[in-house]
Image (cartoon, rainbow, N blue to C red; front, side, top):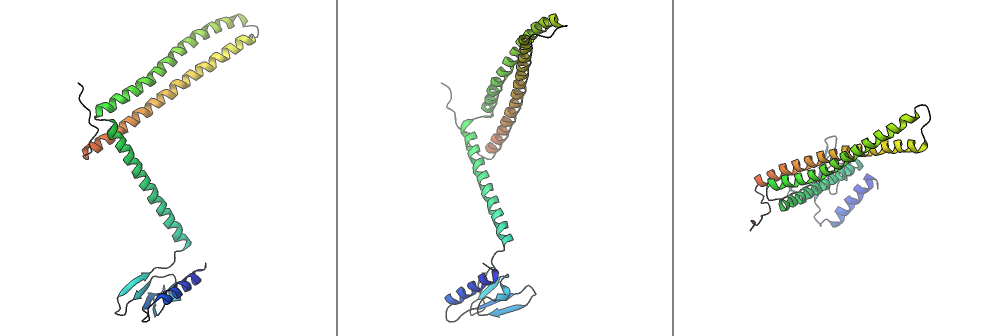
Length: 212
């Protein structure tokens, strides 16, 4: 709907519901001219209009219809506020979980150590497999020496290629696990910092019953 038509409909609606002693509407145009009328002036369709009581006091201010740009800006701001509210709710859930899971910082460190130990087992297992593959490769290399002047048999070629693939897979497993250990450390560091902040602010962690 065109702005002029929207403003005209608004003006008619105001007049329709106005009492017999219709109030005055005052606005200031973009050029600085003050206009007074018995209905919202069309000249001020993009400006705030003051509705005055009979004693000259302001009954209300009629804001102009939002432009497409203003509506878009308002929608962006509304989304930002929704996102921020959701972020705060998520932080509250994480804080509550933290306080319900750990009674002391030492429990967070113990949980970190268990998580790291589980991953260290994977690294040791991969290193052990790497040693086995290294011994297998030595045997394959020794066997290949008999074919220095001949083409390697297909079976030996496949064994060498398979050995290379398995070595690469174990190396990748070790690299990925070490990266995961770094992420574990960062997560637990963040949890300890947040735990300290919450306790310092007066939050009460879960209470543990003393061991019998």
